[in-house]
Length: 445
Image 1: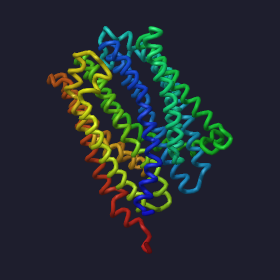
Image 2: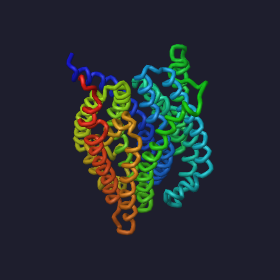
Image 3: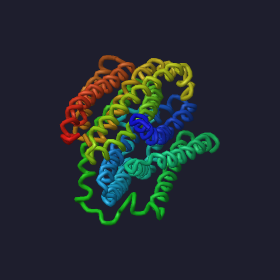
Image 4: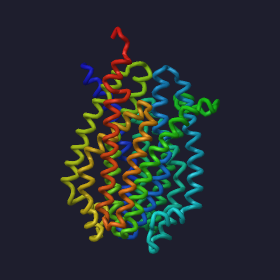
């Protein structure tokens, strides 16, 4: 078998199950959006605002997975399984603390958060209630995130896929039952999500505690500050990176909510589609996170570059394919999420942004995964922060200039173009550039 085919098989072994897990995970929000959309524009606006707040809590802590995966992979590449298990333990401990803290913050500050997001008075109370119910799953969500990161570090993306598909199936069944059959409305969707996500974390714990896995994946005893320091160092940069991205989406949602309830409803539909497709492409980024680190730590940076180049080729192909599929379904997809005519017209005004951004998104997300795998945390943080500042400046001009929802999506397009430019520079000038790899190789090679 040629090296190229062997590489493709390794990528497929990691990316295909990761694709299932990543595609299944946002289905919690997509399924909620589809069912809640049947309750009207106000319910959809409530969901849009609350979902943005909850995503902020989730993504600000996704360093728990993004930091753990390359550190575990690098430790295994150095043949240090105990170090890898302690990274998993440190991530689980941090997730527990962060999850409980986030839950308390969401319960206490829900009215303030909803007001900051610009919720209309007609939906503010319902949004606070929904947010408080959904926040009960925050510790579970963060522990599930750690589960993904630990298994990816061990180059196992199949187990997270099975668990994620399982708890999404629970959500799929409970949503219509609680929303319509039991008459709980939008709060039924929140309860269904909480039950499903806690079922997922219990499932992960059962797998980790099996005799064959005990002490291999997550080691909680013997944790020290020095042992946690590498994860903490990665965490600081990743928090800046993720926080910058979240700030952009939070400002975008706040601006859309101040335009009208119809605008925020349409933004919820478009942004959920955008995020769903972005995470589908992120399957290749997960493969990059898992494959790049061990190759670099074992001195095979030339192979790391070959992996990166192949992932980018595959990512661009997937992005173009997604754009074609989305374009073909332009008259169908919005109707899956709402039957409100005003919201549908607003979705139509921004739907083609979602389509056109797919190839750009694909390259950005794959490159981002490659950067995480190479532990280029500081560069990712700095470039994301710069892009976010420029994007937020444009978003803040939407309301004064009357730019409307279309201008909001032009700003999101600017964000992705700036990130693409920065990551392109890093690829050709950074540690995985042809020149850097050549200098790193032994002279005998």
